[in-house]
Image: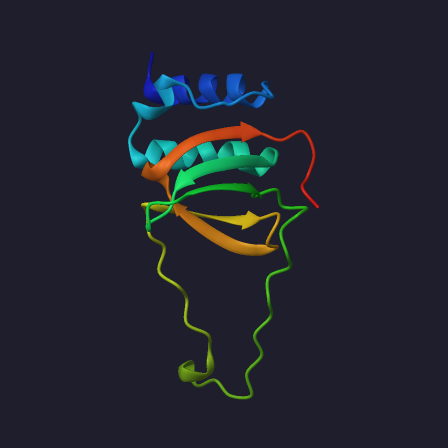
Length: 126
């Protein structure tokens, strides 16, 4: 089965479950494919991602990428056309995934390869 078809089937199976969704087959994928799978799941429902932080501690983070939950994109206004006045765009790190943290109400990120488990949440964390 082609890898894209495998991924789509895995996403379908995982989002139908309310148990931990990372199975052995998830870990066989590359970081890029794991990103695709997680992004697809998080755009549709909140999850609790358990991962090892850079300092070695374990963190369980309720998070989402659901468009209706994300904060509005800030508008930057400038009085000039000088490019120095515009905000700097943060370079995307392909090894990390940025998500909206539901308990901190802030953007947070984690290393994709440090994920221990992901669990679909039935409701948003307030």
